[in-house]
Length: 224
Image 1 (cartoon, one colour):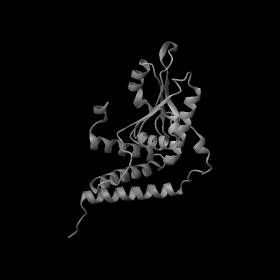
Image 2: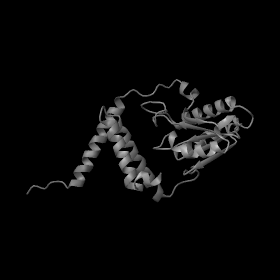
Image 3: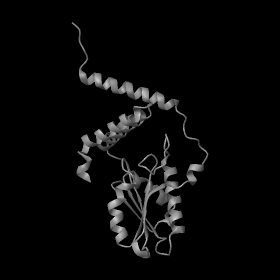
Image 4: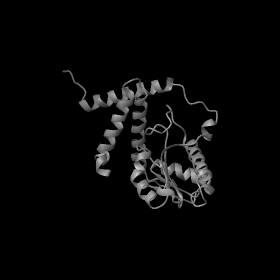
């Protein structure tokens, strides 16, 4: 008798085959040039709003989003704080939204932390008045992690730092947490590699990520 593999095994095999093909395509792509100039760049700015009517800003609030968001995720908070007299700037990570730098491989976190510090330094030097030159960093998710790195590298740039939904990474994680984190990141890596495939890769990778998030935590609209 002929025994056909169960549908679940077939789907898993197909997914692994696609991931292997995507990984091969990724390996054949040229990697980023390592010349150091990326450390001197600044993160791109998605939103920059100041208090209305020429009111002197109390301080500059610098927002950095996480995955899979972009700078626009902070708009409601920015509207609130601008009305309270703060200048608000939302930076955008590479390959996120309309303002983030477009690069195939992205950058390592130390590069992003350096770019965040370059932006903070620029805000301190260009904001009018002593109060406005005070920069308060607010980071969410990966933006919080990068914020930790930036603040530890150049603490003099920031009046305060407020991370949200991220831990500082001190101490080992329990195994029950480690395997879930590892599985989650492995899935993200597979979706990223699929996204490098020509033509169909990007929409397919986005679809996988969006549906995985919806399956894990429910529709994103419920969190708006």
